[in-house]
Length: 295
Ligand SMILES: C[S@@+](CC[C@H](N)C(=O)[O-])C[C@H]1O[C@@H](n2cnc3c(N)ncnc32)[C@H](O)[C@@H]1O
Image 1 (cartoon, helix red, strand yellow):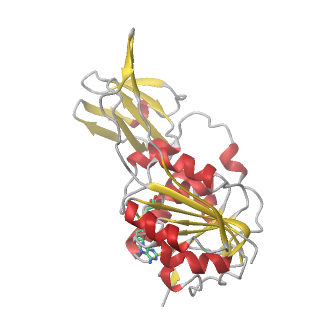
Image 2 (image 1 turned 90 degrees about the vertical axis):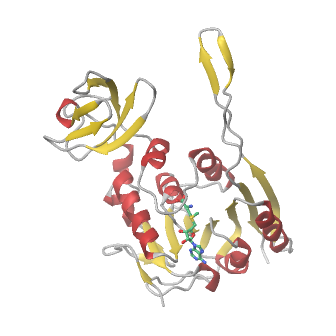
Image 3 (image 1 turned 60 degrees about the horizontal axis):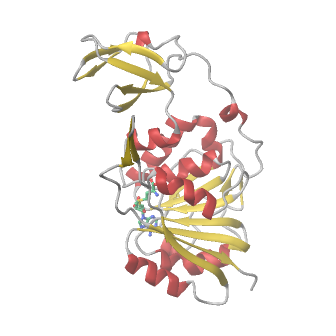
């Protein structure tokens, strides 16, 4: 038995996808003005340590270096420097998606920004696309998809994670984005027919994005639901998962199957001391994608 986890009131669900006929969300393109109560702010100290919080009049944020008054940020423009009660300096900026993902409240392990960017390109995510995503976890991938303009139907088995994802989406993208986002509590391995959605008609999806333990168990459901030319992409931490998945993608209904991983190496740049950082993230996950071919 499944049920909707997010409010979709006022949203017409077409082909099981939220708001597929709604106009584009123009608020996301507006240039932000001065900081106001309710805005998110990214505070960065001299050692580049970061903190994201929501501004409220009269509030004080307590750090190891003393209190930071929200009122010092309210009314200022981005980049303003403020001081804690003990004199430490902080810059105040609006968080980008990457900073929000790294600082937001999480339930499940998120996909990191280094992989989120390539996923948008490898899955060729574009405005108006109908995307099924499972599981939604903490909502990091959902946010990237929604901000790229997609309509996202999420399948998630854990109610606490579903709530967390919806809350994170609302916190960063605003309530308007929920018009293109619906999360149903359902097991994706059972198919895309959860109660509370209109169901996904054959060929009704442009993309299927997976971040769950056994993505090969979703391949047949994706084959039925993806339009010809549609893309399936799975993020999997282990190479054993890649092997299982690639076997399930080896039939004639799938083409151009590719697996890669993304390595990101930061550089230390101080004066003439320019060299790769000693440390880097060794491994996160593999990205496997394939095109659905006409049957
Ligand atoms: C690693 S998390 C996804 C994180 C997400 N991609 C993000 O960026 O925040 C994996 C999620 O898949 C969910 N899950 C596992 N098996 C599932 C299934 N059969 N159907 C739906 N969701 C499932 C888990 O509950 C968990 O929330």
